[in-house]
Every structure is written in C-alpha cells, then in structure tokens.
Length: 111
Length: 113
Image (tube, rainbow over all chains, first blue to last red; front, top):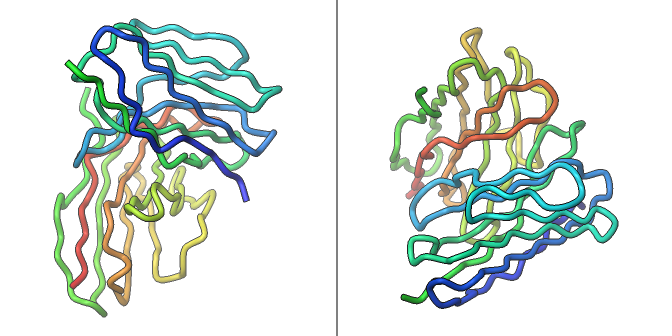
C-alpha cells in the first residue's frame, strides 16, 4: 500500500513566522511531488510541484525534496493569516498517473 | 484561461438512486482524473481517463464508473447509491503526457439520504 504521511496538526505559527510542513512517503518509485492548499469548503489548489532533489522556490513558498530519505517539505515564509488552510502533500509515479494524498496538515497563522 | 468546471455543485440523492457528475477540463488538457474526498478517508483516487480511455482505476466498487468524450469532457456515474457515498467528488485536469501538474475543479458535493 502506497502511503503518504503528514502530521495532521494544527500547526500554529504567528504572523510573519516561517511555517514548516513535512511529508514522508513510502513508495521509492515516486517521482513527482506536489503541495496543494485547501481552504475549508473549497477544492485543493496546486501551489508547488517538485520533481528533483533539492529546493524549489516560488515567492514565499519553498519546496524541499530528499528522495533518499523519502521526505518532502514545504516552507512558507512571512506567514499570513490568509495562509491558514489545510496543506496536502501528494505524490505519484509516471506509471500510475494518479495522485496519492496525505491526510493534510492544518496550518493556523495567528495575527 | 478557464479552469476546470464541475457540474452540478451540489446534489442530494436518495439511497438506491444513481447519479451522474460532469467535468470539463482546462482547454487543451486531455487527462481527467476523479477523486473522492471524505473526512474519514481523505482524498482517494477513483479513475483517470486520457483520450477516451481509462488508463488507471482506484480501489472502488464497480458501482463507480466513468467515461470521457472526444472533447475531453468526462462524466462519472455512481449507481445504487449508499449513505457512505456522501462526499465531495473532485475532478482534476492535466495535460496528460506523462504525469504533469493536476488542477482541480470546485467539486460536486453529493449527499445521500
């Protein structure tokens, strides 16, 4: 069974701080990794994708991938109350063409 | 560029009935995937279609089926509805060659009573 593990939280950080969200996966053939943000009552919104080891930055977001450790993380710099949401980690391999999601981490940014 | 469009947004059905949900992908995207989201099970993959062919299927009973049309629009059908089928059904659109980024529609909230 392919699994993606996330701490359910809530992760509470003060406004302006760095939020660090973590995800581990069990399937070594996983090749593509995604972070989605989901506000309550809404659908998931893609915020980052990462395919190779290392860091990928996009604005206030940085995704980090370590395939040897089967670990992917998302850093949110200068966290804002509007970042309060559930963050879903998703992985896939090209053969399966399906996303396997973690259960999500609820982030709360305190004003 | 228009996003992924799902209709209807909300549905209330009775046990034993069947339901059809519709998804129009982003223009130019040829792959459509369907997911079920529930509080207990999270997001789970149902099936994926590309060029009118189902390429992959998740671990759901045969009551769940789907199809894709030549214009890439997709429908999924759930027959003999059960209370446990109450969920948010999400459609995701991607370009389809290999695995690329997937973008979700707003979902259809199905309530079975």
